[in-house]
Length: 341
Image (cartoon, rainbow, N blue to C red; front, side, top):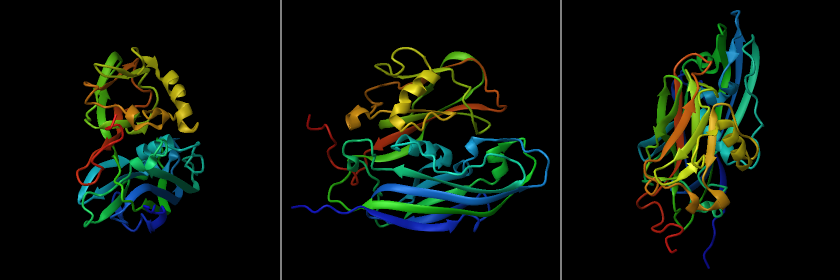
């Protein structure tokens, strides 16, 4: 009888992100030659804001994850470098309830602020019927597996507008955990999050389109709106996701963004929507067979209407982020669920 390995909830380590200059990256060496199910990342800081006269407006939810980029080096190659704020949204999408255990920056006034927030990167997707059908495994088990966290060079510019005060970190640490197990069975897919579409919005217009540049199965899509890098919610008025063959979201018309977000909210533990993000998950009933397949759904695209540019000044941009399910030679199983049907 085959034995089942216990999931190890391991702590990779805790490091100060201030051991290197702001704008540089800190490396965390992960356990290799295992199936990684989850990565847990916690950021904690003490920030002193002083001098100056203008407190301005806090942007990007005042989240510490708005100050970092996160990437995973697999066998000497980085598939993607992700803004921490986007990774936080994917964490929200698969949480069983709203993630509200955090302390964020809420004011730019002179004071000292304790900040603390975490996220979980799910490789074994908790919303599917057999989560271990997806997991992360490196391409070359003889090479290091490394997580990198890069801080913003100018935290004040990343988290505020109109603030002229001095910002100084007394401490800024990252704590990383890795949940993993060994198994004789390979996963069917390796999940990868990356940007699969982008568009600079120059003005009001209907039927604007963003082609989705992916040939992999898609388990989820996030549509992000920003102005000068700040999260905003007033660029897109209505939206649909469609291909030449099917209407994926919107059912043949541009539905108001407010309606679509509220309809999707029940899937996400009640924690969404969040200003600037529209999240769509394609795993109804926990079935991998419900994923969107861009090969079958040719000319897959996000289509939206815009009545005008954001009230927040600067470049208006819409990005599409996808949770791709990749098949990797010598890593994933030779057959996938549904092959036998």
